[in-house]
Length: 68
Image (cartoon, rainbow, N blue to C red; front, side, top):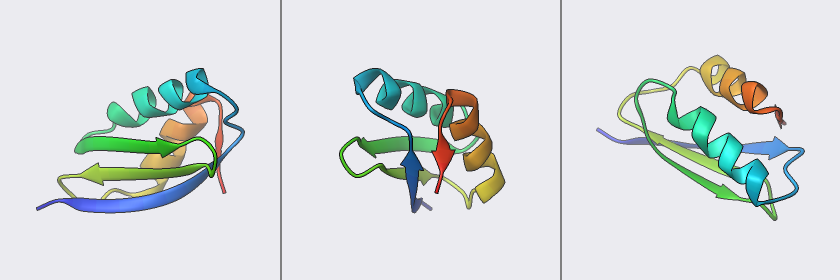
């Protein structure tokens, strides 16, 4: 089973920002993929289970950004 959810992340301004968000979300248990569109702030997380929004928010916050 593969589950995807898209979030809007604010505060990203460069490729390093994208890498930081991708890295932190990649460490969340169950995450199998992270796609980030810098221009829109859209972050699509693919996982092998339903993710708790709080887990995603915590990972994005740890990277230094916010989920809108």
